[in-house]
Image (cartoon, rainbow, N blue to C red; front, side, top):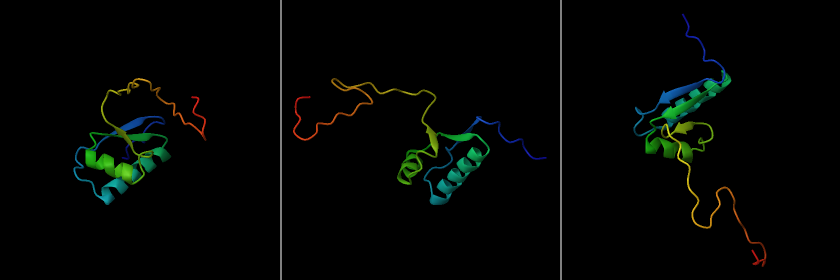
Length: 98
């Protein structure tokens, strides 16, 4: 008997704590898992990711594909004095009035 496929929009949690020092085949397997999940209309979120695996995901350019959940609580960064989050300011060609 085959298992039921996930419901559309269902999120699949994947515990990646067993991947200590990641190898390219392990990264490929995670990417293929995400690809299969997306074809089924869902997504995989990686939990308990080692710093080495997180770095490899970033270096491989898969940070937009493989969703890494660092914890159950999302922390928002506070703006530093004189800084607004989400706004980059640039002074163009001699316009120093801003």
